[in-house]
Amino acid sequence: MKSESREAARVFYHGTKADLKPGDFLTPGRPSNYGPRKNAGFVYLTETMGAAAWGAELAVGEGRGRVYVVEPTGGIEDDPNLTDKKFPGNPTKSYRSRQPLKIIGEIADWQGHSQEEIKAMRDGLEELSRQGLDVIIE
Image (tube, rainbow, N blue to C red):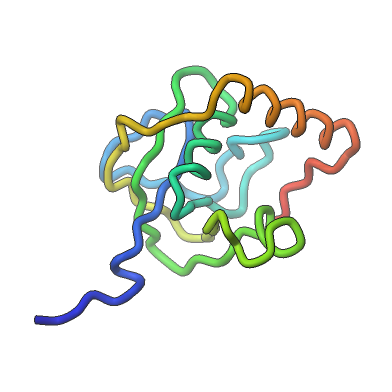
């Protein structure tokens, strides 16, 4: 029996408010889920449910947050928005790709953050915006 590679055993998630179905693709070049809604040069993914939950809870738009299991169709790299000087070593296991992410399925019973935690995060993001520090590294 062949053993699975480390890459094949990894599970990736993406949090958003978009209503997607298995087989759909998240593609770069679409308006960002965050901030001023510029077209994003990357699509983002994570190996942690906590980071995916933040993505679902903080995404702009109407509707409920959703967490999807995704499969990268090309290479991935550490997300510099959440690594390097901010969180050395990538503890959030957050990545990005210039290639589409395929929707494999939806996690229906994910646990979100408390309303207090979400408010504190939004307040912090608003403060960064006021300071001009809400820059997405593309």
